[in-house]
Image (cartoon, helix red, strand yellow):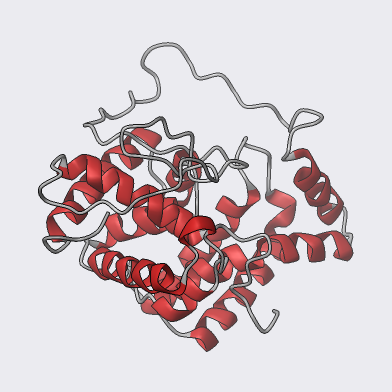
Length: 282
């Protein structure tokens, strides 16, 4: 693993995810008297905007998608209604996932270099998830190595289900963390300095030193509130807004259906709205 396992290259922009989370919290609060809204640029990366605007996703290349803060019903049980359409056995040519699937097929054929490329592509994603869970860099590095060792042993069993390989890897990491603590309850031990310094230093019109300090303090307050959620809500928020996972990827990782994840996110956002201090700057 590289010395800076939270490098910005190939990494999800955490600040964009936190911006998106704050927008949903503002919608849950629903009162301009309760929060102070910071000005935002009119345009920016996918997932940025105003609370009243249309949000296309946490990150553009993964179609993560924000979930509206409204109650969501559970999906019907299998066996009721029309049978689901089975996913294709491989990505369509030209699909962004086709390159990754090509590497997977080569790794399944025993090509070590192909698995090495998969490692380089996903090591930051796996490390970040584990680091949020355990709060110790040495332990996170060890568990990240164990995750990829287990993935190497199991790569031949991986089949295309229409979801990114990263969700499969994080599922392995999740199980290893649970084994380590001998419990299914997760602790969010966020090292805010590493988390926030791992992202892009420039913020366009907001890139002044004063704005950077305010932004960091605001995010630390939000992350502190996330720590107070119950374990399932914590993990949902981490996967959706700090990892940038889609609803489908989060559901796969947490072994739930998509309706349950939407409902869990809704409850978590509402809980955060209650936990944040009065005057918190959205």
